[in-house]
Length: 96
Image (cartoon, rainbow, N blue to C red; front, side, top):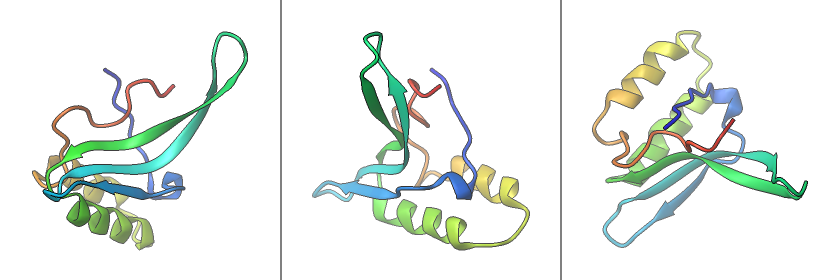
């Protein structure tokens, strides 16, 4: 598994997929790749299987909209938080 860190300017297409129980996935951006035949593919990059995806989205949007320089402290706090920490993988492991 590969884990990548993203900075707020890289959150280019934030989307929430939410299920009836409030859990879901939070897509931050997409990464373009090509397959072995040269056909283009788009890979979603984000957090998967978040217990409270709506709260996670509000935290990520607040981070994306903030202009404060200490992004790393906030970024690390979000990854340690139980409400945002994914159960399966942090970021799509097929990216880069």
